Image 1 (cartoon, helix red, strand yellow):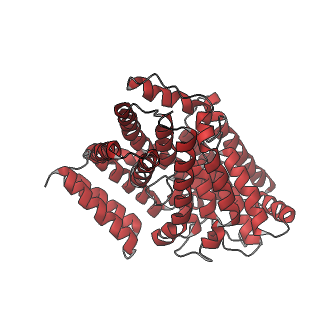
Image 2 (cartoon, one colour):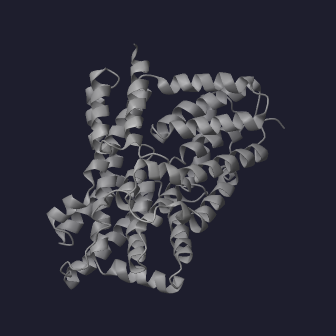
Image 3 (cartoon, one colour):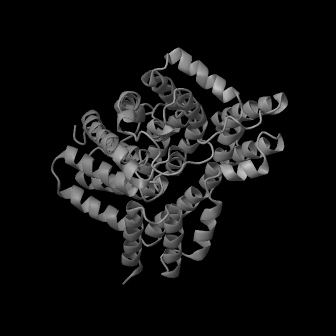
Length: 429
């Protein structure tokens, strides 16, 4: 068997183990990584490099920053204020937190950062109302993932330039993406995600954790109260970390550097002990994240993505209905992004979409925005984006409960995106 077939077999077996649930996901991820290396689907140096991946460092650091913030009384006071305004209504609480998360998503181009900021507050609000955070954390993750850069604010203002770069690279410059085109295309999706997560998502969430949760969730009120200095340090560090992440582009500092600095300061100023900081990191989920990077790297290294893309382009050229073509160019990248890094999928599929449209003498703008939207909306598996493993850790979800909560919003995203974008940006004038 060639490496492509071997890679696909290992990937299928890995996914089957995740669904089966009898073997810990972290262990499955490491076994999968070893299999990719031993079979030559992934070189050892690349695999080792994933342990130092910037997103992984961000995830571990945000576990610590969130735990430090959660250790203070300030988080309880904020949650109490939110609950008082909401008058105990879960829907009103979701309204407030979802809108704040969606706003942050326009300025911070990292779903794990947005989720890491919002999760402690959401958990504290739920605990005060005696509601399991499992009811709310996955909806918060969906918002943190699917609404990023939907408006031309912050990082969203650069989306059009990136798409025009793809058009120039593939010599199809008779079409140009305007600054507001990505917003025009994704605005209905943004509205649908917000409405769904406020009013409906909690109805499909489990009433209690399915598996054990991490330390941030199991905060003990009988811990010794922090001194006034440490209390102030805890929330000041959290607030300054959040502000630095919002201004990251202006500060010219890598996001993982900001996150790890915040985590270290929580320990340096005594908000958390060294033992508490290490304990706040969910190591099985970290291993799961590294394993997911290895799977995506192996699929990319063996050319699986290009093979799927080539088949997709051939299939699209045989379709006569623009909406069917749009559906294919949304659903395939969306599904592939569940097991590969979204940036990798975009790099593969946007040029393929442009070349397919070029062969059809069609307008590619709607199609490439569909591909981009699909790649930025991956939340169905822990391999999709680092925010999902963190959400699973804090919410106590297994893969089955995750997929169960994902099917309806994923279907809504697909149908709304394809119908709206292919109508507003028709392939043929």
